[in-house]
Length: 112
Image (cartoon, rainbow, N blue to C red):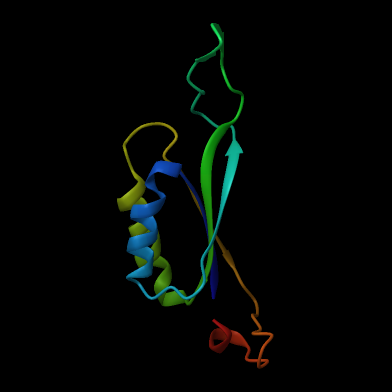
């Protein structure tokens, strides 16, 4: 089992979500987050004053998938969220040693 974490542009979330749902991913959590990276925030104005926000809004996705689902999920995220510009996001993959379903004590892939 693998945990996939992806930081993507918030505007791309719906397309990514639809694609992931079609892959039978059973567990997905998302968060609205802010962060900094290579992309610089665009200057904005408020009541006549210009300012550059320090943090840029993004959506963070987290899911645990079976090993054979990793490549299709990563391809889905990359295909649906890429614009070719700095700030498209990042994907991180880590190993999950064990998973448990609390309701009935299933473990391993059965818990997904």
